[in-house]
Image (cartoon, rainbow over all chains, first blue to last red; front, top):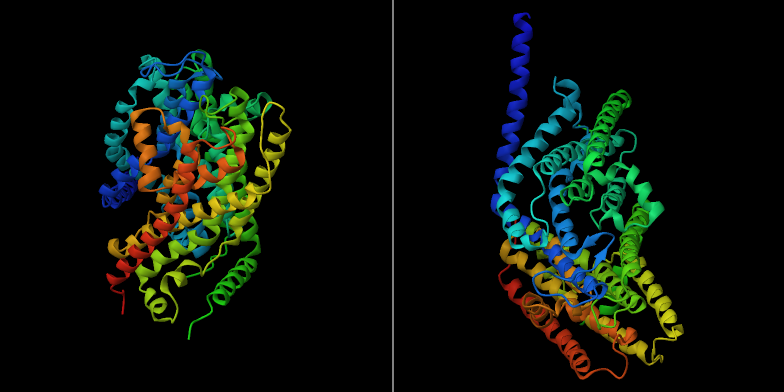
Length: 290
Length: 284
């Protein structure tokens, strides 16, 4: 290895490290606001708890005691599972949601800011990914406390307690992969901005679809048969449903590992797609704006 | 000389429509997305009613009754989002940028002027959809031999009256929320707050009347911030979940709703005026 390539490599590492540090500091500025915002995020769950109680109360045969909740089942979910599902989905979303990514990319393309990546020897997607990792890390650092508090208060809904270590490991890995999936999927939508200057509406449609198809709105088992099996083929379910279902033991054994493999395959698919979009897009990019 | 409030309002409405129509594609997409949210919500409850026949034991919120409730929520939401939402946000922004100065100088009531300039026509389809859902569910309910729905056209004005009461309450809540920007400098969380508050009135209030925490929530959102009655009372007029004649508590709550509408409007007026006194412009 020549000396030049070694210095090249160190300096490139330094570049990424600098990006990372800047992004971390950027985020730490608003930490108070942040913690409150995280707690507020659980407020809709509060109404969900009451709503599902009222539903399960009717489904169940006998009136429930205060501790255990109603004993009926809907699509294989007990009352506790249902509430636990909604709580777990918030964790999934904390990994897979990428607020502002699509818009950010499209805005950079439209305003011409994207030019800097054509001049500097820095990769745009790599840069954005580093920023996201930094932002998410700060988010977890600050959000852990409110999350832990809410989950501790709601611990009785986790009827079966902690899952076995193996399941737990798959759960954590699926969350990490869902971060990458969310990133590359939304990056692809943003990069469409090379072809259509206005992708805000596209982003909105994606958000709608994502809310329903990822299982953010309700567990996918509730969907009627044919629609349910169709949705199972789509990548969206890995953004919210899959990690939660693994945790709750809805998906187990081989099925769990197959799911994880498919999730990773989707990440690779969108990674390649984003690269293709970028290369093609840059070629037809005409650099409007200052 | 007094300005003609009606003419000013009509001018606002026309200007907003002209503006919406100049970005027609955007307008259509906005309509589509707000209608899609509503349809998805409808789908969720359609699925839920595959598994249960009522939300809350003995509450009377069967499928068709509940869809009348859901339609009512859409109507109220759409009224508030069409007429007030964008304006409340704009008001926050005016405070931050100092543009409120211009509104204060105009020879017309300031609260009126900041409340109506931007009418968001794209949110109206949701309300029309709500009316459709209510009408459909009413027909279903009337044809159901197991239900004993008392229907007369006299219910219609009562329903409209309570929907307007609800819209008034929500308007007041929003004016109060956005007035706080005068003290806070900026209130970025207006939409978020709106989402969390509407979240409580999207479901029948019976779901809260179970446990201690639930009762506390019910009390807070009925008597402190009266948002639960916004949807519950008008929906009960048409859906009659517990049949007719109304129970005493239903009548009392209905009376309270009308009172709450008047009181919250007065309160919002008071808070608005107090907030204006603390306004210290911005920029130069």
